[in-house]
Image 1 (cartoon, rainbow, N blue to C red):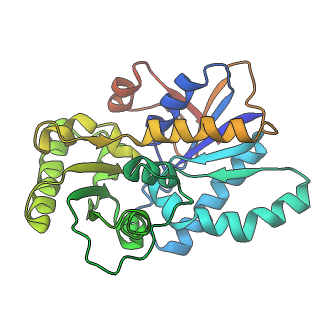
Image 2 (cartoon, rainbow, N blue to C red; image 1 turned 60 degrees about the vertical axis):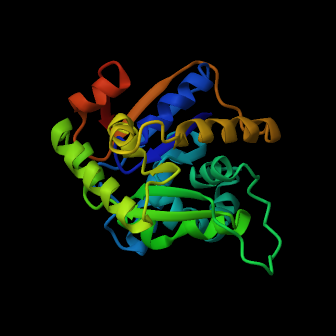
Length: 283
């Protein structure tokens, strides 16, 4: 078996790189749906259909466990796939496959609480003294997943999402750092204006944004903590494997990179981030 990692494009490589470092002997297959990237501006049903197709391709490639390294897919499609599609696929194929996302680990890291925890109802007003800003796609912002799920667990945390329309596409298309910085600074300023001050912490709620995390750090006040989705996802996956030994990870250290888009070497931005050239093969 191999671990599948899925994203609309190259952003999921931020999670993939951390998983490879955490599980160096495991076998991995990465799939980028670059023919349809980015997902952030698409309709919900379209995101569900595209995510299902990507997960199915990874199952066909020998993966029994797939990580959605895409906030938009995790926010919009994951629950639907887990509840309405996976049970039938398991019955038809006899395979004990599963799909996981990265929003649950991120919320656990942001709240310091397990996903199963729900705060008791409070009769008195709780002072919100911790403000988290979430930079994300339009679809993720519209889902309000971070606001809803964090509020269930920590009433003292206020969450403000800033939809960064088009930013993932700019990163995918290898935009210059100067152009990216201008857009990121604009969104950081817009978020600060809506809150009335700078956020205490920030979530980069699109894995593409992790590629330019240093630009977000520059746009925010010095020292603003960025909640790290790749690390949170790797921590959660490590715990998952400890509970589910029925999912072998493989042990040859094999790495495959697939794309629904144009096969070949990826952009200079991705190469710089990854630390070496990456060549994708056609999915």
